[in-house]
Amino acid sequence: MQVTVAEMMAAREARAQMQRTLLSRYPGAVLVCLTMNIAGPVKTDADIERAFAWGKAQIRAILAPQASCFEAEIHERTGPEAVFAVRGDAGEIKRRLCALEDGCPMGRLLDIDVLAPDGEKRSRTAFGLPPRRCLLCGEVAAVCARSRAHSAQALFERAKAIIREHFAGAFAQKTAQLAQRALLTEAALAPKPGLVDRLGPGAHRDMDLFTFIDSACALRSYFEECVRIGMAHGEGEEERCFDALRVPGLLAEAKMRAATSGVNTHKGAVFSMGILCASLGMGFDSEKSDARAALWRCGAMTRARMAQELSRCAQGEGGTAGERLYREQGVGGVRAEAAGGFAGVREAGLPRLQACLAAGMDFEAAALCALVALMARTQDTNALRRGGAEGARRLRERAAQMDASLCARLEAGTVDGAREGADVRRALSQWDAELSAQGISPGGCADMLALTLLAHFSDHSPS
Image (cartoon, rainbow, N blue to C red; front, side):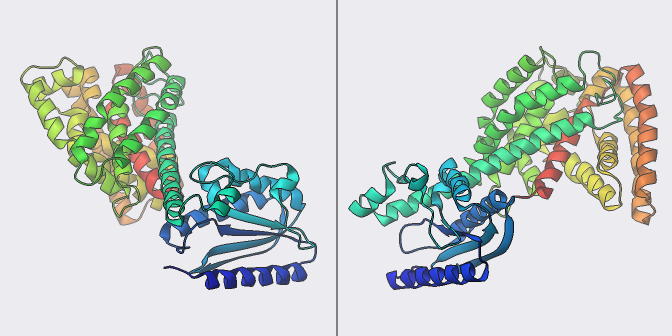
């Protein structure tokens, strides 16, 4: 929606009148006024409003230590505006807000005026700060504007690109943070039968909680790269997206081993969580951005390639433990899970976690119940390798009994959150001692639990 010069002049006069009124109403207050620095006749659209909301949130955080008198915002075709009246030193507030304007490309799109109680506008040059720079060439913006060095359309398009790049980058960073959080949370949850947790190493002798912390921290940049790879592939490019993850995955595995002195802490998670991060990236800013849709999309990404790999395994190719188990027992492991869109997470882990939280259980207890649900339905290749077919079968049957009992109580509405959590921990503590003594560790289920946690965090973390 285009605006005229006359409309912009009228909006400027209305803003000046509002400032005079607020300075009169709140004597001694400092006014902070936010508008968007957008060239051209289009002053508002969904992207600009989103950038404005980001800028307003940053200003509010910076002003938080100041006593607030008044805050308001206006949304008109002439562009969004916000005004804050606060108590404080106008010069110090101006310096802080200039740091916001200069701190990142998005800050360049914010036009923040600071008015002292006497109505005088504080200037950045009065504090020895450099003038603002042009979005396109980096020269002094005022000089470019006077000489009309760039077209309004070129400046508008650059502003829109800055907004898109900012939010895409923020999404990639946030998703990588959530993936790392999921790995760290899964490692710390206790007690977990046969698995490393904060109480001990479980059935393992070559790793502990600190090994997992080192590994999770080393993998964060890989998860961000996976998200960005997903963003670079649109609908219909799922297989190509998965292919693009291959080399980064190999490099991430090497990085993991370097951080853990060669210990394989998260090889399965490098594969499965890398795929989910990429799938979340493919759904960025679309209607398909929820975690369940992302899990389904993992199947479209991997199904054909996993079928090819499992076919080669059946013909005797490949020498990993998982590939040998597929040849000998037909258990597809994490490849089959991925090809099915991580059905265990969608149909067991995530629903159980959320149902237990809704029933009043604390987060750790609910996550442990999700682990039990995953153990009940997952053909865990790690448990098969360590405990044999019989040991793995007993593990699934015991988990299935526990999960069925819990589900019956959830459906009947008889779950007491605190008591149920204590019961779960007591039962799992005993089971942990048994599996640890037997050397059985359901590591594949632990990876699926981490995926469950990432899916949950993705849907329940503030944007």
